Amino acid sequence: MNASSNAYLYAAYIVVWVVHVLYAFTLLSRAKRMKREQRELR
Amino acid sequence: MKILFNVLVALTVVLLGYGFCQAIFIAPTEATMGDVQRIFYYHLPSAWVAFLLFFVNFLASIGYLVRRNLGADALALASAEVGVSFCTIVLLTGPIWARPIWGIWWTWDARLTSTLVLWLIYVSYLVLRRYATGGQVPVLAAALGIFGFVDVPIVYMAIRWFRTQHPQPVIGGGQGSGLDHRMWVAVLWNLAAFAMLALLFVWVRYRQALAEVALEEAHAQASLEAEETR
Image (cartoon, rainbow over all chains, first blue to last red; front, side, top):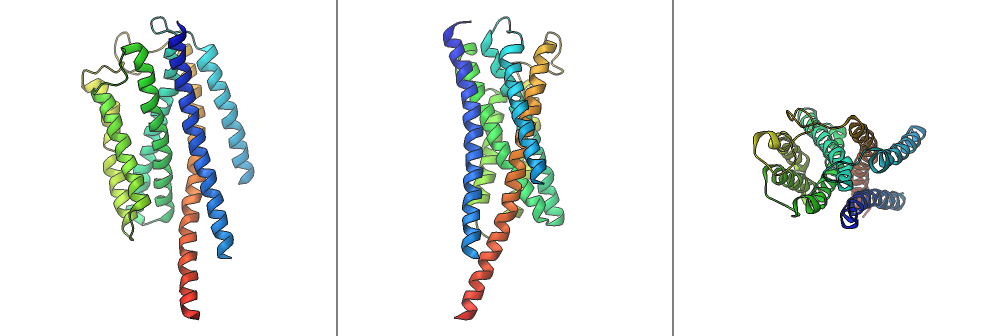
């Protein structure tokens, strides 16, 4: 196994976590926006 | 409910950590591909979780059309959105594995093409839900979810029905296929971890979808009251 093949392995694992973290961030920012809208409505 | 959610978050973190250790440190190195084969431990569970989520979307879409239940519609939306995120991972990790093994990033074989079509179907489902207006949007989305699901068995069977560049199936793939049991252990731990993560994401998104409906109704009510007081 050479270093350049390892780079593909690292890249794949990083991509997986970036996608999950980005999605979690989307959920969090949507939750914040909705809380703000709910406060404004009261 | 909050306690249960926090327990599930903790359990998911533990499962993800252990799944990572299984994939990188415990599963044996594949003889011909070497360490790059370890991409498989994230690629395959992501694909199975995406299929499962699209199946949930299919059932929830039928449920919505039959009963016009808001909960079913919210579940359909949540499962499609999380399913697209897992399907995105499948479409990204596949080419990253293919480049060192095949020497190319992509080929238009039946498995890869049908997976890309699957992703496009559910992205269009989300675009429809996000940008279309009018009372019939959930009905149209449900119809798309039901007919779009037809592509899932096509993706699954593509490597059995057609001659493809994609590796042969690890389950029921005939002579010479299959996995070392230690590799199966790594697959199953990561499948459990990703399934738990998907459950958490769907849970949060489902509650948000219901809250969005309530918020829209509250907005409409507020503007109606403002009209009346003028």
